[in-house]
Length: 324
View 1: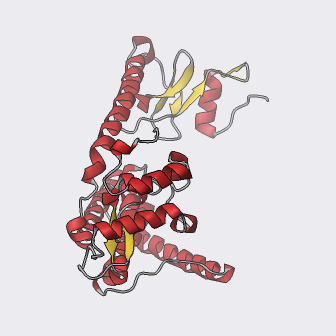
View 2: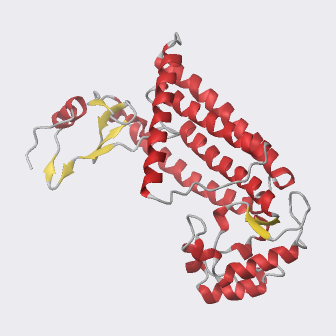
View 3: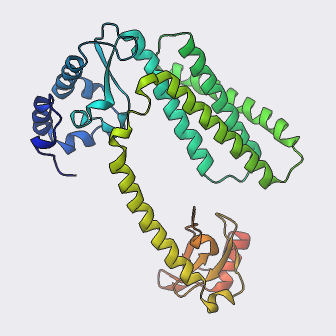
């Protein structure tokens, strides 16, 4: 993305834009793709942004309408180019700032749940253990938010603090795994049915997470729709490219000479069947419309041909007789 000109800068943020350009523009923003740090909050750019937001909001807290002296990022996606997305920032008083942070923590939790839902799962018991953890994490956020407990960041000041935290984490994980094994083990279903059941429960937990975020943000919930359309267009273009690639793979896999082949073995990634093609050994699920498998082995590696018998042995036993 090239640096925008002054005509695309929101009114009231011209000074911030000038400082942003002097600081490196997009190169400055690239430093904070993982979120702001102390150097960001100490920068002249942030000081100008903070002043502009407080003045825009007339020093009124977005949550309680009290006196505000702090500025909160509703999302870290735009850090480093905040002046171009001013609705991602709101003025807050100190107590309410902490309450908004619980919403951010819930957003991070929601991303974990969504990732778990969309990812592969081969063991329902471990799948359910993560659900138990997510439930407890969300419950803890709700209790602190409802009790208006002051938000504090998890900071390990010493190696001993980190060691204690890791020990407590391992104890919790062991508890979740034991509880999950007992609960899921009592279900009279196939493993696939158990996985689908847990996935449905995770989807319900994701909805609970969204409800909490909505209640925590109040009127600010849905603010990001202001900037959502450009991302939707970009996402649609990416999906079109992926769909074209899947279609080509599907066409290649549907050739008569391919369909008449005997499979060489099961794919170690998705357990589909592996076949030989013109230039590679490929999983049949590489043509799947959703979550296509990317497992493949070239017919020749380091100028040495890879024979079907070697691939079959590799898929079955995990080793081949090929010499280096």
